[in-house]
Length: 176
Image (cartoon, rainbow, N blue to C red; front, side, top):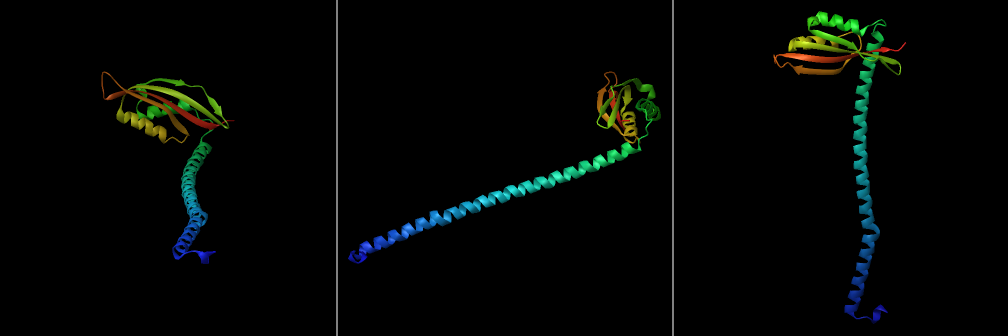
């Protein structure tokens, strides 16, 4: 059958056959191969991002665990008979701001799990900035586990160098 074709027709048939083979090679082998490579590269990038996220979460977890361990140690060293109200009176006296103390109001005590939280709201008036810093530093350096839940500072209208301050201080102890 091919022998009956002219030279020109034979070239067209061979050329067409080569084109068919190339198209089949492209759509049957090369295009699926390139698609698979792209899919795998995308998955690799995705997994690398997930790995970075896991490393970041691990770092955050270790930081939080360290903070929790530190807090647990501080709670373990806290005295059972600790009174937040008395401690705050003592700190204001030591810090030299007892005369600026307007009120101390205990807040509701709450229990969360195995811990009991006791809070006191303190109002101080006409504090100078160094006095406020000294008070906050004394609270931060306390042996008991204390946190400043709220801190509102408002400058005085009559003397801009003095401040009215409202602090809510909380202490945590193991529930009995």
